[in-house]
Length: 113
Image (cartoon, rainbow, N blue to C red; front, side, top):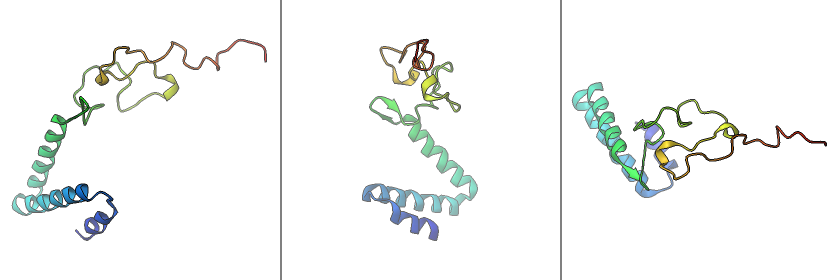
């Protein structure tokens, strides 16, 4: 508890610090009442709330939940930036292809130097 109290001074925004303080005390009460099961239920409820929240029409847990299309580049193991040919599916863009087939044209250029 002392470590979390010291770490709370590192949060610059007052409203975020206040929210985290309330959540910290809520988890302490859940742990006191139901032990590890109470903390697990608290984390489950918090993740369910985050999964239903959206910002600018995109879910907070967008690259991971909800899974819309597994063939896109939005996954745990992403290719390098220069090798990504399509935009993420959860963004719902008009043009899913973000660049040309060969994005590093300078690397494959066949000319005299």
